[in-house]
Amino acid sequence: MIMAMAKGQPALLVLADGTTFEGLSFGAKGTTVGEVVFNTGMTGYQEVLTDPSYCGQIVTFTYPELGNTGVNPDDEESEKPQVKGVIARNITYRPSNWRSTESLPDYLIRHNIIGIYGIDTRALTRKIRSVGAINGIISTETLDKGELLRQVQSAPSMAGLNLVKEVTTREIYEWSTPTDSHWNFNTNNGETSQEGLTVVAIDFGVKRNILRRLASYGCKIIVVPADTPPEDILKYNPDGIFLSNGPGDPSAVTEGVSTVKALIEQGKPTFGICMGHQILGLSLGAETFKLKFGHRGLNQPCGLKEKVEITSQNHGFAVTEKSLDAEVEITHLNLNDRTVAGLSHKNLPFFSVQYHPEASPGPHDADYLFEKFVNLMKENKGQ
Image (tube, rainbow, N blue to C red; front, side):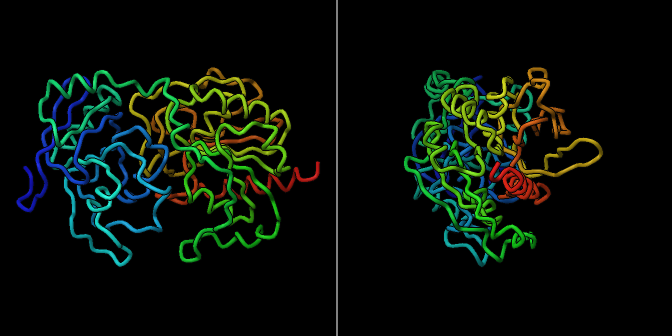
């Protein structure tokens, strides 16, 4: 039942299998198509909406209230929302938070992002868990279920889709802004702040807070487009290579895989996160596969050998364990489904994780990985 205070005109969500949900619109008007996924986080919706890893997707929020804290410029992970659409149970039009500068509906209108609310998000989430992530269409302008079904069934599958080219930077730039002192929970950053380490970050869809964490650990960061040739990257004489998160099917990012293959032959310390983890795995000869409904939330347990980290995750693909070379070892497993969540090379300075250790949003358990990367660069500096 939609609340009495509900606003918005009628809207329709149609999945590619014909399942239909009727609701009300919030945000922009129009029609949008994307892969429908769900996120189980109870907070951090602005970081989710602006995470480039969600490019091409319509995000269902399982937490029933969305928009209570509004939005603000400081919590954006990129220059704009990256999602194709938003699905919620209930929306707050009047936020209450001292940091809020705008309501969520107004923010989405300004960025032309379509949303639907007032639907049973529990039923939708159970549907996705049962059949897997599925293409869907949201419309406020066409309420003809048959016409919308025809449109959504013609949309491409996420498998085989290269979306990195949609979100990577067009220009090379340097990032130097660290985590704001109000939010810097790690008091050990000062110990590594004078190292003068240069990191080239390959942008497959990087989040700003990942760059902030690297800067907080004393790194000079040069961010380059995903299609930058390896010889151009090496001209910066980096102490380390960082492979960022990003959207779509990692196996379709063939240029990125080729670049990383060439770079790892140089033996530079390399750290991959999410898409970067998958591309590093592909570069080392492994394979990837599409998960049924992915891992998207703030409470994913990962670990190995009696140690567990609670992690923030957002991905729909994973590295195939059986395809790993004997020289590559698994450092973390997702403890919900035992898929590969972390890798390292036994002899070379390469490692990666499937999750987001910068904790934006999410827990701080895995922030030590940035320090691990810094220490790896210091150990290999000058060799």
